[in-house]
Length: 276
Image (cartoon, rainbow, N blue to C red; front, side, top):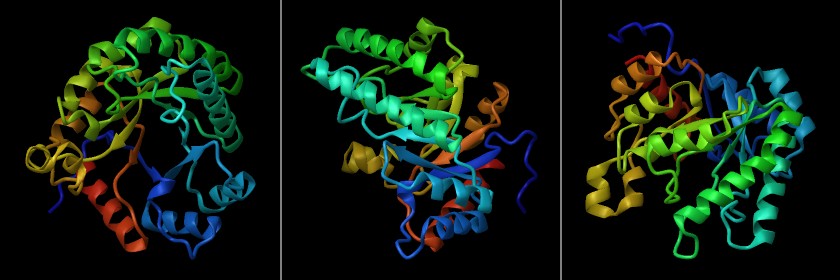
């Protein structure tokens, strides 16, 4: 028998990424109606986008499926850390467009990867350029009222929670927070350490799994080829750590998706995890 959850739930509301949905036979309204039937509370979209936002807003209102966040679609192709000034400027413009989209649909956050370290971009240069880029973006966050949420990804940058906290604290701005990706941490560390250090700086959580044994046997990216609850994440410890900092907000699933049956399976897995 499933034990009753400790209140508050660490993931009070569950969303997923629009890119996970594989239902080309459904229009926007039908898609959100399906998500509501499956028990999803929200869905996040990429931006800039060609999606008809009026239709999306109407579908959200009709279905009750919220639009809590937007994902910047240009931070990989036009990183704020690029050595090319035009590329950096395009990255800023793309993020501004994402903030505008978020304001239009009523989203509260835009996810941002702040920079990438590479043979062409040193760690120090990435730090300085990312700082400069975010400084340009914060006035737009203030204007739109949308929070910028920095995510930990495999970008060779902000590799520890202490660095992540220092990056945010450089600005000490209420519209800048952290989008904690649980699965991305597991390759080299433990989500509980990030939760402990970042604390109230965490404004969103991504739910993802990772297997270190698959990583060792098949390569780093194969570590993600594991179902939620079957990898190396200590979900009871993660839940306890999130409760410890008072987090009970949105959690967005980011795993391989599919049609109705697959999305129903994912939602059931999330429900099993969040009551541990």
